[in-house]
Amino acid sequence: MVTILTEPAYSESMWCRALYQSLTERLRQKRISFCEMYDTVPVNSEAVFIIAADYNWIKATLTELNLSGIKPILICNQAETILGCNYSCVCSDITGSMKYLLNNLKADGKTRVALYGVNTSSISDIGRVDGLFAQKDGVIDSMRVFVNDGSLQNCYRKFSAESDNFDAVICFNDFAAVSLIRRLEADGEGGKLSRLKILSCCQTKISSCYRDRIISINMNLEQYGKAAVFIYEKLKAHPYISQMTLNVSWNSEQSTSPTSSPISLKSARNTDRIYSDKELNEMITAERILEIDSATDKTVIACLCSGKSVTEIAAACFLTESGVKYRIKRIIEKCRISDKAELISIVKRYLPDYGKNP
Image 1 (cartoon, rainbow, N blue to C red):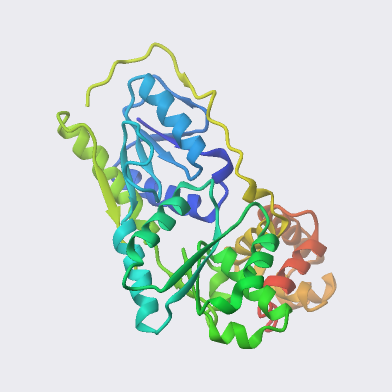
Image 2: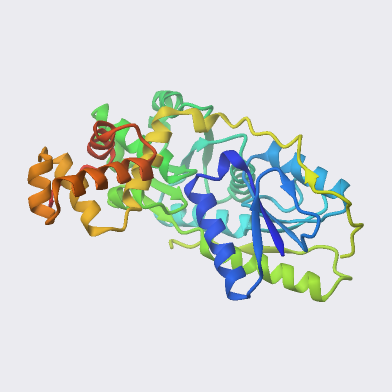
């Protein structure tokens, strides 16, 4: 059996869920049993996979595992040697991917670039910033970082004061890109919005609602699990190999000492401020709404947003009124919100086309 160790604060994000699904699907295909943990590692675990993003959490976790004789496999978009610990890794091809982004901009005549929504607690974002600055000479004339310190509103305020200096924006995730677009529109900056070329790292469902404004880069997250299991199998078959690193590219589209008890990861704590941002959490909720697969549930949401009553929704969906109420309750629970008023508010705010064809 192998263990999947997930950073708690990262576990509910779209990116973590995509990486987790990629890994578990591959493990099931290979008939490798696994368990998921957050703060301990079972004694009998053959290997430990880590899915995480926060630098401090990763550093603390790797250090404790190394002290226990375990060299884990980290699944994370990061620079290969940034942590100074003993581990294998599946990460982005930072150099190649950042070069791809900048060449994309240069080909379009965009050479004054803002890096928007950078989370300095994220090892992924740190690696991307380093990679972009390493590749910019001879390609980009100027580059400026705008940090997300836990408030996308503050990030926009700083960018807005300097926005005339840029002709392109690389947003470090789709939520930052959607936030930027909505704020530019709210400020009546349509001309500025049409002038700026906006690239976004990581495809989410919410970005498809703004596809005429955002060029969303495919990070190929579905390939990370395959790469991680490949590393596991190779290290198991060849114990003389100490560690491996595999890089996944983007497109626009050993013997260890056993322990006698489970390992408790007491120092692994997360203090990432961005997850306390109300606007970000609303967009995460919008993403959950878009992940709803049931055609009937989609119709119920669309009808609610168009102002239909429970009786009218029941008739439209061929349900009883109690059946409609049950579905609304289940949707609210799945989206992790308080009530249907919050559901309607988020759909109208972030998904303006959702309720047009109930």
